[in-house]
Length: 315
Image (cartoon, rainbow, N blue to C red; front, top):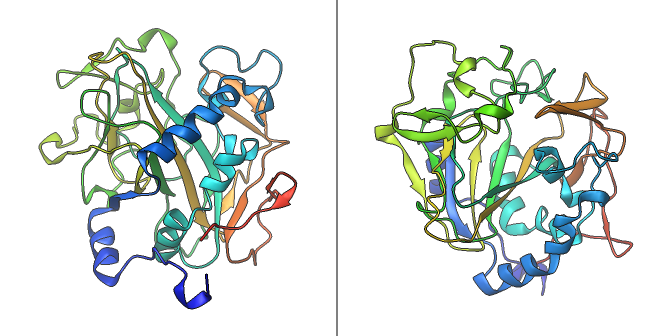
């Protein structure tokens, strides 16, 4: 394929205007359902066995601890290729500019009977840890990360698809520097506005700047997605998910890749990551440069390869 015929997925001027207004773009196609299902089945054994993950430390990540699902793009080839897919990166660059890194990926499974995820926003991701996890330059007029959430399975209202409140990304309703305590006993036991909602053992409302404030759920939009589609949104956008009503015995599985410009500092104050009741070393962690170059030297990078060969986005 010649350079002149290489497909571009960059946002058009109208799409960028819509994104800036609403804080999200999509859903859009990345894989066909058959492609996504085949890749999911191929990587399932690796996902179940987290021993190759960068945060595996003996028994520290046993059971269902969320950290076991972090950054699997660093050890699973398909996920390494996924985070640099042009369908994702071209759209991300339209918002963040040419020099972009991926600093985190994360799986979000929702099993039959699971509660919905609480309404929340993330600016510096200090909410359930000890320190800000990303820090923008002092002269930046905005924070947060650009999240691309891909439906590895079908996502419906009944099995727990995403919800968003368009346009809510420009005002932070939460203070991530407040203390929020992990309590495994509240999982699947909280009701908010008549809906079972929680945040993986945390009560996200503890971070509200105004204890009496409530999200305006009348403006919420459900993001129904077929298998292989994705949506891009600011982490500061109010987002949540429906509960899995258990009408099917199949889980809903989403996979997020989080991107920031290379000017952003990642984990600048820490050499461990503490979340969800565990603390793990960041020794094996590294950012992945997905576009452009790093002109700042703030962050640790890894040279991700597939079968020993450095990979580039597939066109």
